[in-house]
Figure (cartoon, rainbow, N blue to C red):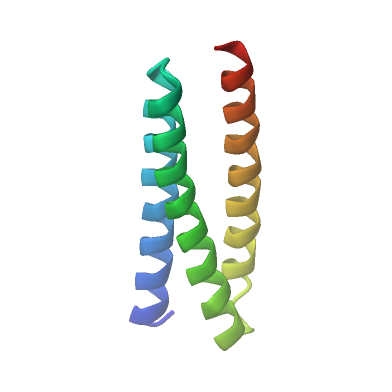
Length: 91
């Protein structure tokens, strides 16, 4: 695995992690504005991580780890969106 591949994987995993933490912070605040703001920032990080992985997968088709992490990112975004709707209906 080259240095570029390692860097892409680390940055995308950091984007997933920071996006998840920001969303969790938004859920802890029970204000609608804070929840939507942190959700937007977290989803932006998740989408940027997904796009980074997908673009590198298009360049290097032999690395299926990129595609696996894209699927995880999509599942995380579906989960975060579901939690957002549950929190908004509870408020």
